[in-house]
Amino acid sequence: MFRQKTQSILISAAVIVAFTMPAHAAPADACGLLSQADIAKATGLSVGAGELGKPIPGVLSRCTWAGSASNKVIVTIADTAHMQLTMQAQQQSGGSSISNLGLKAVGIKSAGFTDGGYIVSFLDQNGGVGVSILGPDGTQDKAIALAKVAESHR
Image 1 (tube, helix red, strand yellow):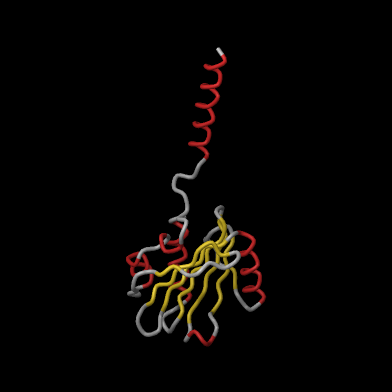
Image 2 (cartoon, helix red, strand yellow):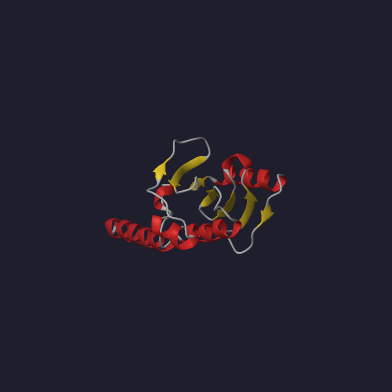
């Protein structure tokens, strides 16, 4: 009797876990979030293979894809607290809210020393993601389009 109850409880717990987990878990590393084909389709940019960056506090993973003409795409996966601070700083520096992306999203032009570009940061149920397209081809429209692809893979 005890064994049947224990098995029944374990099976019930397994069913609950299976049905409450997301259909697909967010990739653990930023390089797994987007492919070269995803980047090309969303932005028209041709980039090389993604390279994982070194870990830093608050950032769970970062990947950089280098392109031509000093263009590069950087995707950062961060914990919620880190991304909230990042987004707050972006808004205080002239960033603007972006609708229809994550729970909350902010976009901002990148610093002048990057040869132009645009950065989009968003929060979702899994934490935060930053999508930067740095260089002369990094436009607001391209960065938002790529951020939406990244969101769809989370």
